[in-house]
Image (cartoon, rainbow, N blue to C red; front, side):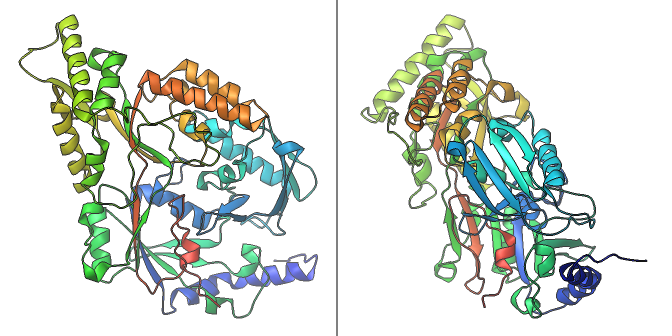
Length: 500
């Protein structure tokens, strides 16, 4: 086999590629690997698809890179692009690619990066993330290493969108990320590539400052047991369902880390007929829920309830939308809700007036979810509604939504209810207001239109907010590289780096 070397850097890269298998094999036998449990399933974590659960997002981000990435603090850092410059009042971004090659040895250039990015965006069509990316008007290869992303209107959070694991630029021959995934019958390992393959200068002692990661994928109870037994040093991806399973005694002080990211945590109305076909009844259900009492069951400091579909406290929130019913007593709110349910039953002739009307909800299984369901059921019984768990998700009247925002802006929240997604009840008026807002150049006008869209969505009562999402991790004090952040996303490579 003959190889043409065009520069000393090509020579070093070729040597690194030839030695990488041996280096990684040696690396996998070193002491001190970090054991990390991802809460999820094997099928989910190692999917090759583009619809990623939290466990798969962590694996994808470690093994595949986009133009940019998130670091452990939730900040945007270079990945395949070494730097970027916004121009034209934020309607254009120029990305300069790092020097290097794709996994198959072909040159990493703007033309091939453009193709990979267009492919990733195209595969996300008809998803909520695809709607967020609709602001991208054109992608151009300007020079061999410069890529332009042109927008139809300014998008302050374009970099956060491009950092999503689903926007990784994938190529044949292997992963484009900093780590290699190796699986066999006994274990699953993530191992760092040599520096040149990560777009960094070659260093002889690079292996002294990185460790392998042993990945364990398990349900909440098994992941917590692995941690309690000392088998893993980190558990990632915990949600409300597994929170009551975590021991919170003196021995675990400091190991439980809580993230309170922006996002949706509430009930999406799925049925437009029957009881929930009445907007007044939907509003009655929303006003009858004692959110403070629901959250108090879990004793999480700082976890605050909300009646807004858009998380309060977003950057630049103009304060035009307020919380609902804050000046009304809960007893009075429930009297109103009960009267609306009874009026609907009288009009429709539905069921025996002496019995509760049944409404179903789809939500996950788990100790925390059971607690939430039981408390919701008790509260709704106060307004003559019997809440039951749906046998199938597509047959449910209500669907529990527990979703972290991709970026902290009203557009993300409102896009989750876009009629084209067919997730449940929606409002074409809201969709039109969002489209009008996105087209605005002036930030103040955009914020005002977004607030109007939120107010209209609130009046439609197609979504019943409860709070923001809650996520938790377990982390031993001996593990470096973990930071709580607003994304509740904790990159695996940083957990495997040894401070110099």
